Length: 332
Image (tube, rainbow, N blue to C red):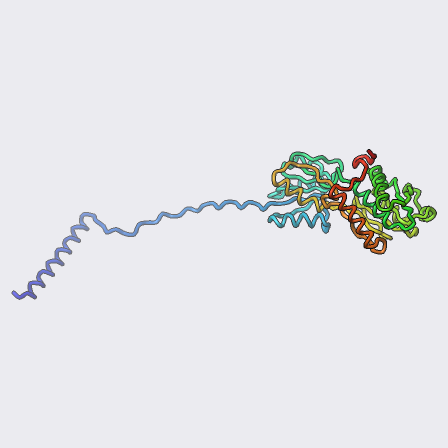
C-alpha cells in the first residue's frame, strides 16, 4: 500500500473518532460553554441637589447703596438674594425659601431673633442690642459727637460774617450731643465765630438775617430738613447731616456729613459667618461709615476744605479729641 493511501486511511480514522466522541458527549449531557450572563443593573436613586445659599433681606429698599453692597457681597460668594418686607409676614415668606444662610434686617423685624438661629445683621435698629448670633450696625451707638463736631468745623470755615446759627428742637434724640459737639467744632474751624441758637419753630429767614447769620446747621431730627427748606429766602449756607436718613435740603447746601450703612454691612456679615459673636458696628469716622459729602466749592475754598479734611483725619486717628461725652454731650 502506498504512503498516500496510508495517510488517507489515518485521516478517515481520525474523523470517525471525532464524530464518535461528539455523539458520546451529547449523550452524556455535556454542553459547550456559552457566554457568561450579565446581571441586570438596578436603577439607583441620584442624590437630591442642595439648595444654593441665600441671603435674606428684610426692609432693604431696592436701588440703594446698602442694597447694592449686600447683593454684591452675596454674589461674590455664589449666594442668591431675596427681599421681603420687614414684618412678620415678610419674615415668614422669606424663611420659606430654601437655603437661607443669613438675614439682614433694616430695623428690628418682629420675631426675627427667635425664628432664625443663623447669622443676623440689624441695620439702624435704634433699640436693638447685639446677641450671640446678632450684630447691629449704624445705630445704636453711632458717634453723633463726631458728626456734630465736623458740622461745626464746616460751618465755621464757610462763614464770612463770623455769625453761625444752630437750630434745635427738630425732634431728634441726640440734640444735647450735637449741640455741644457743634460748638466745639465751630471753635476749631473759626475761633472768632459766634454761635447763635434758634429753636426750629422760631427760625425764620428774617430772624437769621437780623442776626447777621450766614451759615446754619439743623440738629438731625424729623423736622430738620423742612425747617432748613423754609429758610431758603435767608440766602445762608446750610450744613446738613443725614443721621436720620431723611432727604437733604435742596437749597444753598455747603456740604454734609453722611452716614453709610453700606460701609458696615459687608464686614459685619463676614465676621458673623466666620463664627465671631454678634457685636455693635456703629457709625464712626474711623470705620469710614461717616464721611464728608457734597462739599460745595462756592462755599468752601480748597484751602479751607483741607482744614476740614485734616479735622476728620484727626478724629479717625484719635489725635483730635472733641471734648464732650459721646453719649450725653456733657463736657468732662
